[in-house]
Length: 112
Image (cartoon, helix red, strand yellow):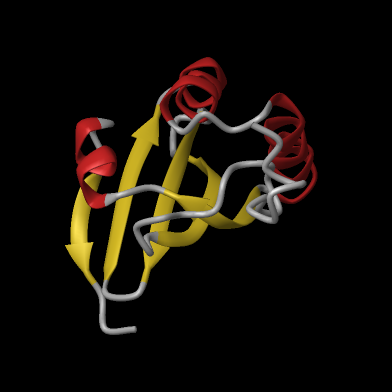
């Protein structure tokens, strides 16, 4: 399906949510005491937040590609931001609470 032609394309090339669960994906690099790095992904939408930590760039990349089904160009853009600033955001990402849980993300309620 041509999502753009149908008027459903989001900023990251994915179809617009039919379930009203679009939110913001925040990916960032955290440096740890022993000199290593870990990566954390937070997905937030009104009233809920989900998070997951990855030990390697490869694990994170696989999650973004296979788990969230982001397009390669969107993943490249995220990595460019992470490499230059340590953090990246993507808006209009569609992840249902059930999908987030199935992907191993931890849930917490939020007040915004």
